[in-house]
Length: 251
Image (cartoon, rainbow, N blue to C red):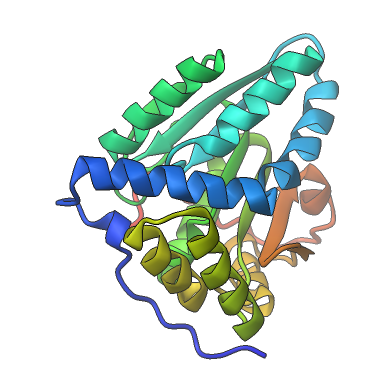
């Protein structure tokens, strides 16, 4: 059962948030990501792409990366398996990127970071794959459409997007999980606010069609999420559709 989408400000997005509370919340959300295994949704696809270009590392940009717990996990797995990956995390929060660098150093991997607002300043180019997790629900429809276009513009091979799937069941599951893994009131508030603000799979499928001009499969990603992959195979299926490409900031 689903319900109407309701966007509200998430406490972690408050620019005046105390840095210590921000770090505590980042750690709590990273734990929530770990128990939901979201990193493993992306990683096999990244490995497959890396295997197709064995002569150089796969270059990955993770947009709105937060604590960068997913990129750090990918780098750790790739290091153990001898797979070449270079990952850059991008977020508008200096606190988040400082936290990410500390976490990467503790994990023994090298992570690139960029402090930039993807909606204001656009995205840097030079990446094979652009990834995004748990950010689209922050956006108005037009912002989501333009960001999808921008991610595709700067990627050379693929775009991977994972987000929460809005439903009553998922709201209950996420609310319970957030209290299980963290004592942060920010995590408790933002976790449920995120589900209420999330798109349903049909809604996000419609946004992808607006952005790209053709249908992109949006698959269930248990628990509580969906995954969309835009790649050259998707492009090959297009028949004479115009190419809606964005450059730079998202007004």
